[in-house]
Length: 335
Ligand code: UT7
Image: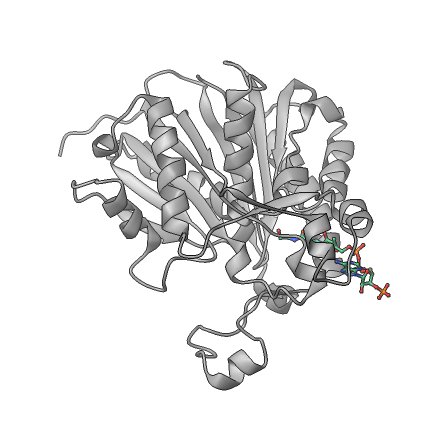
């Protein structure tokens, strides 16, 4: 087999999609014992987008992916690999990546698969795609993170439902002959010793859906917010520093930090630890809430399109989520 190994893997296109419907904190006040003051003060969230009935994760993924392909100037048929990251796939199988392949009209029999690492999914997805592409076998890949969190939260549980939102973000990764650019380095990790901190217990093989699981509300997301918060602060700080160290780049060389958007207080703690000023930190949680794995690629797309990232800039993505899982990637922007 003849194949050429690339010198780097670059982000050649970005795209995102937010559903039309916006649910503000004031809307939530109408049916929940909560307030804009509490939600904004504790999390930094003002509003979130909610997918329409019948609008599936693959539908949102398709729009974000199409926008990323257009941005890259590439046709869907030139993709060699599709990875979708999500915690709420259209169905348990087939994978949302296969459903997306069909929706994008990709007729080539390329590998398409889902990857589940909760909110860290995008960082995991980029690392898996990058490593596969470094073999030289795949020249262009789509990594699409799409989430319909509104379908798995209990709208009567004020401790969780106010925090999440729906949306999708996508990147096209391309093999490049240029050196020292694109994805520079990544650290990934997980700790499965306390999965009850953040989970959705029913609907899998351990607890198949039954009248009883539905009656007990076990098909809804459960979270011990305070515990998750403590771990998120510690791990995101550590992993951001670790990937910088791995790549031999100091934090002051960063042009933009793009953290997972779970809570402004968590984001501020990471920025403080890295001694990065707020203007170098991308925050959009106010408008979207926590969109799980989609939060980083949505932010990347917005930052790139609004000129916040320029060619040659060092950008750091850092995520944390259920599992627990985490990941951080340093990239040198090449567009
Ligand atoms: O992306 C995955 C990772 N997820 C995260 O990173 C989320 C991490 N956790 C957090 O962001 C924060 O823990 C929350 C925003 C979820 C909560 O903030 P907190 O400061 O940790 O509040 P708390 O959970 O300790 O709750 C404080 C109080 C409680 O009342 P008592 O027990 O002190 O009387 C809650 O019942 O706030 C109450 N509360 C609310 N009040 C009004 C909880 N939810 C609400 C609400 N509105 N929506």
